[in-house]
Length: 133
Image (tube, rainbow, N blue to C red):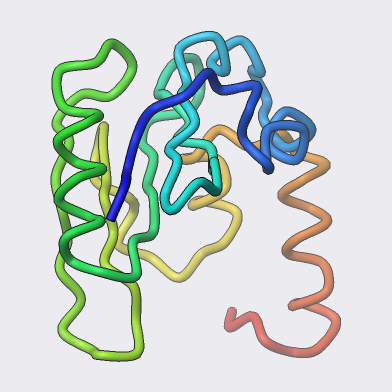
């Protein structure tokens, strides 16, 4: 198993996150995490972005990601959240704890997404009646 860091711009999802973020300047402190040669973005905190996460399908991958991010600027309080379910990924989190809420707008703001990105995500759910009042 190989888990390494790379420049953020090498991440497959770099452009995707750049379009979603209210303050794309946080990408300057972000990094790509290569898991089995596939680089995915770990977005640093800063500006309106108060926390972040990286999904890890395997506990050893999660531990490796946590260890790579620990102590890096933009990644405070790095921790591994173990999933109790076998069919759910473990999560490496950093920054503040995410809101304990199912409110997608609140969560989008917490992760520093721009209004257009939040609206685009929430609107389809609202149209399908999936949002509770």
